[in-house]
Image (cartoon, rainbow, N blue to C red):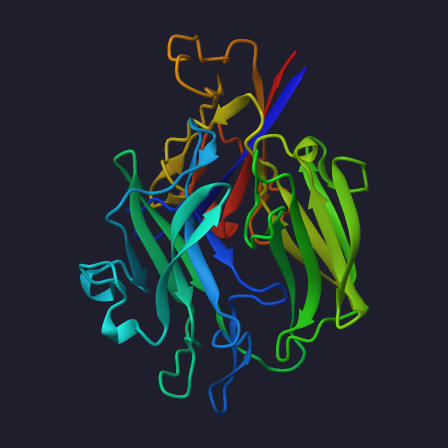
Length: 371
């Protein structure tokens, strides 16, 4: 029996005039993009981006190619709004003088592909700018003539008392951070998860960390299976503070949904992960009526998926590439923020803007089966 799956994330977006594929993020393990600050003096308490720079890069996924693709030339990065004066790069593709203290142009190479990237080299919250709202960075580019927009939010939060967050970092087999794509050049992806105190970044060694996979029966615990999944301890400063989950190609069919779970002081924290495997000979085209990941007001995303056979080289153009006959499809919808199942939604009928706004975005898992 053939069994493949695909994940498509959907978000409510007030403007609704952009396509938002996934943004890749590289940052040192143990650190996140959040800018936590002391509201009295506006100094950053965690993470200090001047000490631990973060790198953003576009991760547009082409269903037909069955791979993450590199955008064409002529792209732009924006800060907070997609307008000319908010563009970070000048006409030569260099960072404008007004943004030089915060950003650098760079590249990220993963799985033999080099992506344009933007490094954040200093804190976006400081005593001088006193930013109190979340910061958005956009990448606008195109692939195959189709314009798309990647969006990355950098939460800005004043820290009061003991607030916690669950951090999850991804590292590929070649040591590249932020690489969640299993391919011929990347034999596994390893996730490290631990709970930390927001105000200081201190790991909470007493938190209980586990991993779960979302399958046909909902969320199920991930266990150690030789050659597929490997769970081990994650240490910081010689102390075990969390867990790592290593996923091999056998554990991921197409695109899958996993989550880390931390329990501490009778409270539960979640963080979702979306690994992708490019080895499978078949792939799903979701057939969603919305091209990107954003749904505007008054719009409804309707799914009509098909399964195709992947091409591997020249000379295969005359093959019958469709493999839709005999496939059946099942859907599962989960909340983006917690991974909780959302019952009563049928993606084949449609998911509306209002629903996405109610649930703070959802991930639709499409499972294709053929005997």
